[in-house]
Amino acid sequence: MKVFFDTIGCRLNQAEIERYAAQFTALGHEIVPDAESADIAVVNTCSVTAAAASDSRGKVRSAAKGGAQVVVTGCWSSMEPREAAAMEGVSQVILNAEKDELTAAVLGLGKTDFDTEPLKRVTLPGVHARTRAFIKIQDGCDNHCTFCVTRLVRGKARSVAKARVLHDVQSAISAGGKEIVLTGVNLGAWGLDLGEELADLIEFLLKETDIPRIRLSSLESWNLSDRFLRLWEDPRMCPHFHLPLQSGSDSVLKRMARRTTLGEFRRLAETALSVNPAFAITTDVIAGFPGETDEEHAQTLAFVDSLPFAGGHIFPYSPRPGTAAARMKDQVPKAIQKERAKQLRDLFEQKTFVFETSFIGSVRKVLWESTQQLPDGQWETHGLSENYLTVKTIFPTPVRNRIDSVRISERQDGKLIGIVIPDFREGG
Image (cartoon, rainbow, N blue to C red; front, side, top):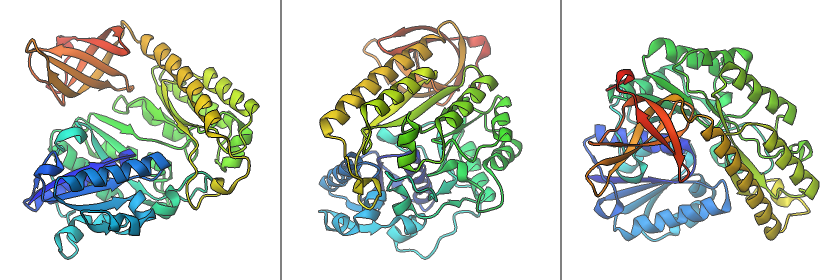
């Protein structure tokens, strides 16, 4: 059987479809790059914003046009299972609570144990191809952020056991993986239900594996100890934090029910930079949260400007069904949201420019992830440095999944250009 996987949203969704692909392959099925050539299309959806929910429906419609039987899972279909089931071409809706058994459910099997031995990681074909392996270590959330629907559709926080995580990392290593990305809904909460903390898991993986690079996906700024930050003394830990700020105003953070203050966020960022000045700190900010005043928006701009952010994602506030913020008074008009989002995007573009150009002339370790042939026969290749710089270079032949030492020569058309230093090549 030929199977196509598509997803939208967070890195956790990417980790899930990578695991499904490995399971289907282990059972003898073929993973294909598009729905047109598939017998079954699995779409992992998102509902974090209204736009994400709309994009999820679009993914389902697109998969159905190819003629495949469409299986829908993920956060949007767990919020709107009847709507998902009623869409043309949909043969099955698998709720988040059941998605760990998706492969068995789609194939009509009994519960299948894939943990007996490491599954070989499968690199997905097409637009979701990654050399980095996304490893799910946690799901669900016990926080009550007033804007967020994820807790409602993902359930309570729960950790993946160390042995299972190790199993998945070994799968990535066996397939030649050079970098793993640990993912979860609330990554910093890993271990709280096991009497442990995230630092314990990372120390375990550093000791038990020889994976060259470990990176963390989005991470809340609480539940992190000083011991946790000391882990970055190990060069295998990628110096990059994605810390969702959401607002640079303490009064807005309070209305959001965020479990942090600006002072605490600043201390964490500054501590990370003291461990490694090359640390990349990226973030998320919501523009136009209910009740946000001009003064509170100005506070957010000032706070963002005061820290050396490497980049950020800006989201105009989107009311989500069932959340407290959707019921709040003083909803900010869309036009004002749009203008505030533009101001924030412009500011983050400046921050990114400053951060990236500060590395011109320096040498970074780059993992090459994608490549395409140019008209002259050479190969334009893009990769990520350990501190999340996107770097471009030209090779005479295609190169992927290799770590090279690269000197950053310039920033051109918004991209960093690198020159490989052959004497320091790794992972060839």
